[in-house]
Length: 451
Image 1 (cartoon, one colour):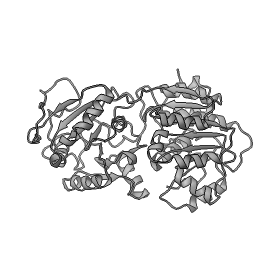
Image 2 (tube, one colour; image 1 turned 90 degrees about the vertical axis):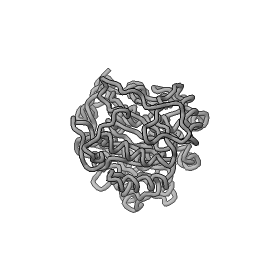
Image 3 (cartoon, helix red, strand yellow; image 1 turned 60 degrees about the vertical axis):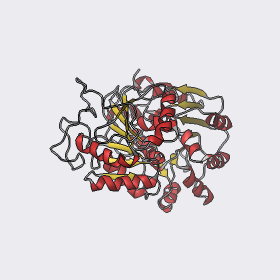
Image 4 (tube, helix red, strand yellow; image 1 turned 180 degrees about the vertical axis):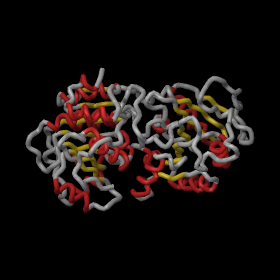
């Protein structure tokens, strides 16, 4: 199946082609025809499956045919985080580049007045986080009475973050007659209960089983004492040609502390968490995508919505205490048909978390120790024998870079992704992954996007 088979207009197909894509992902193949019929949809799809384009493309198709364009939003997309909101609206602008539709992204942490001005000028597609949208509702600067299509994106994360009351308040002021779409990485009982409150006889689509770890991701564990984790991580950076690594910690404080240690070792790093200003978060993410940062150290909630093609490495500096979050974390590598590596540094008091994760994903992870970093309570594992034939560098085969840390500004040879990692690639079937970088003139009005 090609995008040309889905009944999309010439303008949308032109925008898709400009990004170098021709084949829809499984979620797009299933979701787009359903949305185009006007039916409600409940879709289970992990991050990185192309789900964002799965709803932005048909929404653009449905709205472009309307003659009268009111100033009030006709489509509303709710997302749990600022970063995801920006990426969704970027996708709207990218694929709507040749359509007479306007979009606006509103979220907290920045001034509200430019958003008020944008809403006053009129907008077709509004992308918002729940808290800031409620602020606009209370100030009567937004009118949701004309919304024809509602999308709840990453509904599971919104429930985890405590947005359920905000969502119910927003639903209460919206028209009863509308098309509603719910996207979630899991179909938990709470999600199904929420769906029953506002979805009407929805079609159900599931393209990735709950808690399925990507087969293209090599997953390994290094046992190490907690106090040795930072030194081990720095050692790995200095002995491998790592150039773009997403590192997860459990806490904001832990992320900041780790960044200070990495920077001291000459490894260019930044932290991404909720205590950072919006400008700092956007700057860190952009520098990471552009290859200016070697490591981005993030908490689970802040990392939600990070969408980077060809991200080669994810490091769990600390295991999550919620097993499902492990699956979300490692799903940020090994996308679009490319290989990825997920490495977890596990100390003694995290072994229960590790057992829960292995039970969840129904597999035993490869475990090893490294010379010089053996834990005091040594598990019965050791460094595996070197393997041949693979292109990816193995931890048992560190490759020193002339004594220089990998974070010293050097790029590994061989054209590995780094400086272009944030750009969309043609490969893996040509799949739009959520929010593509805009390739043409933006469809939104000048000054309507305020980050």
